[in-house]
Length: 382
Image 1 (cartoon, rainbow, N blue to C red):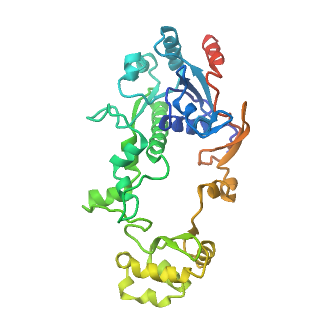
Image 2: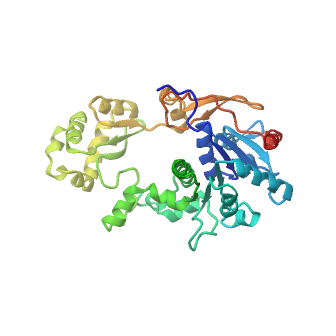
């Protein structure tokens, strides 16, 4: 079957979100062809004012607001509020990330808008959900990481917990928001009616911790920090080479036997202290000493290459710069150029899923504040 349009090319999304979680969700939808109308206050999304800056434009704003149209509406102004309601009447999806209750007070809550437009999918993204004792509590990524248990599991055993080096709670919330919206749209195709979708950053991040959940809920365990080593398997972690560090993942006996041969220690495969995965994890320091003794004569790149040649999953540690500049990123079309009115041609990330027959690229840059306001207002009159 041949496709030419992107999967969501007929979808209209009215986006009241700002900062990261909500805008990330709608950027994913825009990547897939949705017409995302970003509603901003007269001061604009807060991310317009957060660096790094390129010729006065926020790089963060460019990244997570790609492909959208912008209209400025003062939601406390009756005339602008009427415009917002009219846009919601024509939308397939409304998404917002104000604190619970704010949209209701403005007359833009799920109840009011879904009564006017029964086919509407209304998604609310918040730190702790629309219900429960913490619903009104403000949340930022670091707060959710701290409360989820993820931060306590991250870092070295003998050092303080540390946050993950990316805003993973916001990203998790945005990802599950897009997932929930699409699920509700599938249901609407069957029933003709929309649905209200409640997304919590805290819920989303905990859902992305299945190993911890299995250990706590089923095994009655209390996981602790294990640094750069897997909590349950070995050798499965990061090790030092003569220059740099490399990662290794050995998860079964067959791989372990091949691994031992690859590091010139075949006798370790029959060592009773290393007879099964749990034994190997318990005696990981013995393995670490053998691995790093062998790797001392290698760079991280050559150590990883030697292991990979033997069929062992291994890789040198890359910087973020190296990863985005890699052939893999280019070959998989994970980035594409867009034209920006002030910055010229810039490169922005793409959503990662490939749809057969649907072209990647061809997106617009993030909008200037109210860049499409007149156009959108004219469409309402058309």
